[in-house]
Length: 440
Image (cartoon, rainbow, N blue to C red):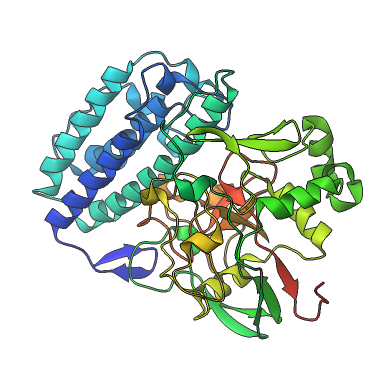
């Protein structure tokens, strides 16, 4: 049995682990197939990382936490990589400052690929012979860690190409029809949930990050939650009504950011004549009114909610709604494997009429909940304890995954978190109301 904190997890046979390891590692390389060495060197801001660094750091994780600790006789590919590709683990020694990752012209991309191949070969041998329960537990963590970086590869290169005046295309070709055709969005409805005590947190056998535990009861007043995400058309109405020029709609720190950064629209939007275009992974396209608004900060999501007279859901409300029988998992959620890399209108994915759509995929959904520990949470011992727990300060929780989240990585208890002013992630808005609010 494998344990994620206090939860037992049934171990799969070693060949299954090896197959999954290979599939996830191949998926990472597939995401950089269209990128040249120069593309993979770019770091467009301190929050982002070069694709080359993502390839190396995910490899470092397996070498540092598994092979170096659990594979007898393993020789590191390069001892200096232990420092160079450490992200933020203080207990493992020092690491370069995040903001300078784009200055690492050496090792070259070819050397990074050799590093990946070297570690993959060692992992093949290790998983065919002597993997312990503890090593397999770390392997599961490492695979989920790599899937997080797959999403970051897309978000970071999108931002890098946006900063390039040529506005190159990451994927090339034409956007799929679903991502550009202006069709009517599904009508917005309000789904009511009664007052009560609900269970929140990871509840099934299988992997979960430590911040999803322990499962616990939480009291909720009656609330209503929107049946779909906020669309571009609705957000355009907020903009046309002077949303970015009305300080009464914004939190104090949020208004400072609006003024300092001169925000007038979501990230990647540009005004062209009387209309708007948005930069996507396939280049610039007209803003589709029916698509979910994307690349907005918590501050923008909160201001929009205030403008409508609604609010953002708490993360517990979001999870209760997502777990309910009014939320169908059969709506072909728009995730990484869909190949669109762009949010899609709710009407497209609905194979049947359900009360709540788009809870998984399309965009990460801002909640009103600060990122903090659940009652009874204890971070794991050692360097692994630095994975989530030390970031529980000044961040806001997002739920649901996005159009670039791997399908096997997301679940309804998953807690993502970012600083409230950040916009380069595929983040959007779902509204909520208290049950006694009058809804216009």
